[in-house]
Amino acid sequence: MDQHGIPARGSRGPGALEPWKEMSAEELEKQYSPSRWVVRVEPEEALRTFSGKGTEATKNAQATRRCQLHAPYGDGKGDRMDIYFPDVQSEALPFFLFFHGGYWQSGSKDQSAFMVDPLTAQGVAVAVVDYDIAPKGSLDQMVDQVTRSIMFIQKRYPCNEGIYLCGHSAGAHLASMVLLASWTEHGVVPNLRGLFLVSGIYDLEPFVHTSNNALLLLTLEDALRNSPQQRLDVAPAPPAGLACPILVMVGEHESPEFHRQSWEFCQTLCRGGWKASFKKLPDVDHFSIIENLTKKDYVVTQIIMKTISQKC
Image 1 (tube, rainbow, N blue to C red):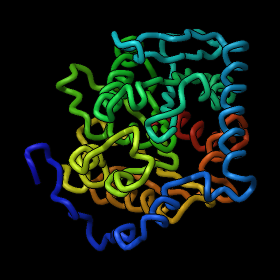
Image 2: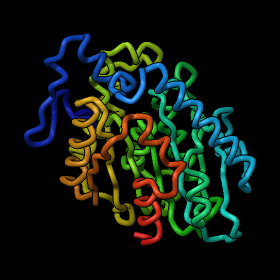
Image 3: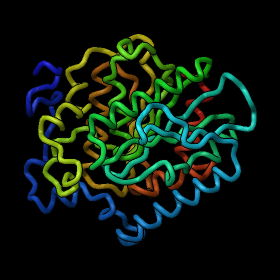
């Protein structure tokens, strides 16, 4: 382990395997290309549909919900979030923060308000967070931005009834990095009550060896420093007050590597004392798993609302 608390290369949890190291370059590329595992439509159509539905949901949310757009959570141009409020006005609301995906190099809050209507209708405030994607932003910068966005909500709404984080794909990675944050150094401990990690990557080492790294330009050191799978495997138990439930989810129609990453990360969290659980969702892929959050009767929407209502 080095001075940053990063385990030596190859350090894994008990019995963990690294099958990606035995793959050809072509197979590894396929494993980390989510659109190639969609079965309902062609890959390009899946990407267009996802972007279109996200944009439509966002425009609808902005037109129908009380909101504050482009709220600054920092001084940088990329430090912005859109906050959507329920009809009821209160100082004590639960807040649901969403971090979009896009392999840290695409996507934005303007295409990501899928869950606003069903959650605000149930009295939950929703903040859709932007961050500086590559090549403008580095991964370390994105992790810092996500951390600061949570601090902003906690400081601005100190009477909140809980902060719930949800990230998709790259956003799930960024949300999971929050588990490594030193909140006392930031001067605030957020009222975290739950994390929903959807179709994420938690060990970035295999990603380094794919073409998706062309814009991000992660080195192996960068990847290990920002891999919660590796760092939490040697981390102490959750700090007091941060032992919130964590649900790690993956869609049925995702690659074996995405399934492995989600399952192994959940196991690492459980070994570390976190209240983690794993769920494979049937009949959905890397994109429809989030698109369906526009529906109030969708299983993930229901899970989110049940978790919030329990105020765990």
